[in-house]
Length: 294
Image (cartoon, rainbow, N blue to C red; front, side):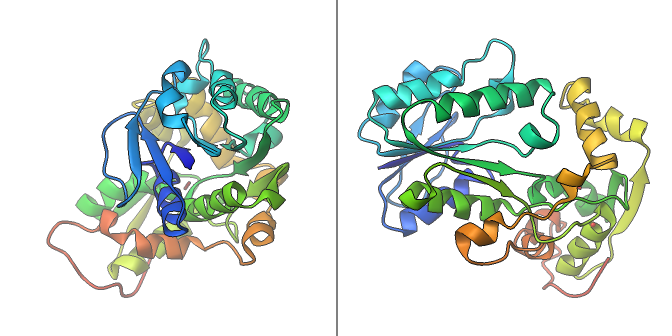
């Protein structure tokens, strides 16, 4: 059996589906009750209380660890998840980390994630670590404004990074969970090209078959919007990356191809598969022609 935490999110959902389709017994763990694929066991559990994971981990051979933001907070103990897994007889763990542990290693959350990576490497278990950069699915931040006003509002319209499709992260995670050849692997995961918010807007418009306007926000405007849902320090950190990515954050990694034997999917593919999120109710048009952070 394989246990997937964060099983209802942008990575966990396709990972759970892929493992089930591969014929694996899967336990999907999430904080709240949720629908899961047929044949998948669902367990409600809070990763903030690792001791409560016992029922989910019983009989498991492998575990995918995806932490929500609150598990990076001061006082959180995500290392206890790894220890609990080891006690429960789990033999292999795949950890979803972040590219930031190498590109900007001194932020608070990145220091904590690096410590968790170290705990996993020293655990005596089989392991693999995935370090994705920006997610293509972060474009869902714009879905409401596209539906209501046909506009994407974002800062740094002509500054890009190689965002990755979460489905590709899930595919790499599945390979690492299923194939012992990836034990000890650390994979940096990016999309196939650097793409700017303006070009992402164009790809969304192409998927919709209708125009979408790009409106460039100032940094202060963007921070004001972001701090409605995250601490100001994290907003500034994110804006630093979006506005001035360093060479390591602009690098297109070969690791998706190394693991999967194919190139990562471009943002346009993600936009086409997720176009319903951007379409106003009652406008069920087929994809057509165009106008695209992270």
